[in-house]
Length: 314
Image (cartoon, rainbow, N blue to C red; front, side):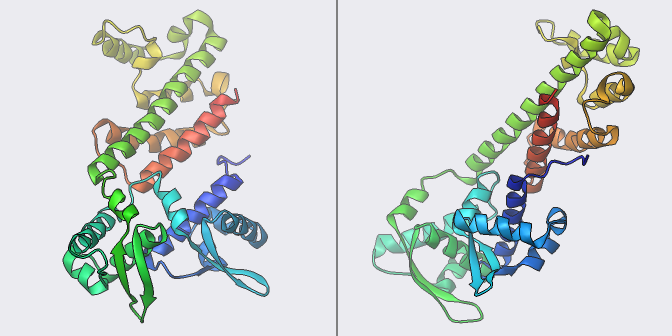
């Protein structure tokens, strides 16, 4: 049995992630199937029919736009709705660009509500590149935050845009710092849920095998001393001893009790230990208020889903 859980939902999430990466480079480009598969290790393993089926599903929900021929779906690109869905679990890289564009168009609006601005004005006034501005203007236009007269010209398209009432309302939404706080709060919630439930699971399975003396029988003297020292600094705590074992030492408890206790719960010892190893640096970043990257947040989500899924089955 494989160590990873890869459902239809996971496949669609991977597709959106890949199309989002292409969208960052060019929001107008349609991507063919081979490009999508080459960008993600899990998608490479899929049959074309399975990939096409999931692309058709995403197109039916409006999360991607499909480029069609008489033979069916030929290419795809993420829609602004799809971008919005991706960004609900991360801090969008374009958040500052979008706010500055709306602030600049609002300045023009305050002088003349019917006046519009073009690419050159916004690249100069915001200091962002042509592609950053074009990508963000297209996104804001698709969601109704800008009123557009369309894109024209090549190879770098131009446009005429002015802010809409929705765009004015958008400026009252969270700043980047507020978005980071919300983002890291979500990360902490995932980590807390995962770690707390894992500790309870480990304790309950050790009790099943060793009874009330599980602490002395399954945990080495060195780890017991470390846990006692940790607990001594929190004299008013009512938590059990498993909660005072350092996170990195949970791996040692699993390894030391693998054949007697944990072999039947986790698919492989290497698999669960590798996941806990990768979680540790994420845990340190969250504990020390350092912002996770989008990739790190997605990894935390994936491990939360996998590990909670395994321990909830037992």
